[in-house]
Amino acid sequence: MGKSKAGLLQGTLDMLILKALSLGPLHGYGVGQRIAQISDDTLKIEEGSLYPGLYRLEQRGWVESEWDVSDNNQRAKFYKLTRAGRKQLILEEQNWERLAGATMKALRAN
Amino acid sequence: MSRIKPTVDFIHAWQHPDEIADEVEEELRFHVQKRTQANIEEGMTPDEARVAAQQSFGDFERVKVDCVEIKRGFPFNLKALRMGLYIAIACLAGGVALVAVNLPHDNLLGVLWQLAAIAVLMCAFLIGRRKNR
Image (cartoon, each protein chain N blue to C red):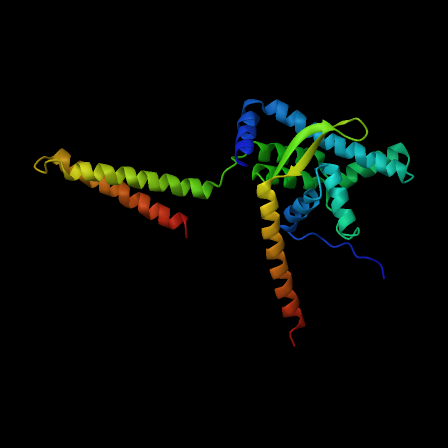
């Protein structure tokens, strides 16, 4: 059976970006790649929407960025999770698990 | 501590708007280049790879404008700040009301002072309550 590409729910993008960055610093392109990789290519981020998401998270103090040199010696902006971002990720994971659990319970109801 | 950098960035974004726009553009262009390279490695011709990269990125200018606007956005919770402002106004009005109460009431100015202070106090309370519903 072919894999269907799941559309991203509003609000889950922030959590996925935080999760991707919890595994190590990345540039924007790398964040998209990592999300695809850890979701086994099921979740594909709309590439343009990734950046407003990253900027919002940076503004909230959950990620921080700095310019560095990428693997092909090009200047690139790298993002990393802050301590506040790590706490936020834990909160969002808990909320998501609660919501997913409740939804599954509702779907299994007779 | 995590609020310091966003605040510094916010001030910097207002002082150097062109620099911020250039920086955002450089970052987005890097993404499109990386995607183009990946498409070439998957077997596309350079032209096909570039077009496909632009398509998968979406509206470049729109994303750039959105990012610059976020960068220039106020990095604090406006609701909390507004509540703080109402509390400050209410405290100030309360203080003025206390002073006004101690003014002699036998002249019109003293009574007006008192009424104005009470009116400001009431307005601050009502606006604060309505905004936080």
